[in-house]
Image (cartoon, rainbow, N blue to C red; front, side):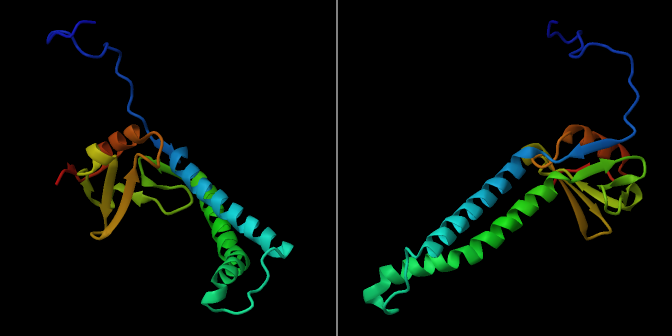
Length: 175
């Protein structure tokens, strides 16, 4: 196909009906980062717990500057598991919950599955100022509440943006 003003850029096809709904599942890239953090925290916690249980780091003779290395080794290996293991489990749970998030937009409104759907009539503004640079569309409703749609976290984002723009009573604004 040649690029002349008379030639259309896309091949002509019969008009396809507009979609009646758009479903966006969670994108895997941000979730992989969450699981990497969980694995690092769990690994450090288990390693320190193993070292503390082996007796490799006995209590220091005194908690002063002369015994700072012995005190630091003891403190790190005996107290780090109490911090790293719960935070690692929390991050793993956060990753599993993020994998299950699904956003749907249909004729009724937009929202995450299992939560209350935002009706199109409640939307007061669409902030598209970060859409081109960062892939973020902010849906404002009830004057002070926001629903942030992020292309980094959602699959099928382009179809979602088109669907939201066509169903929202407020036009997109770029500040």
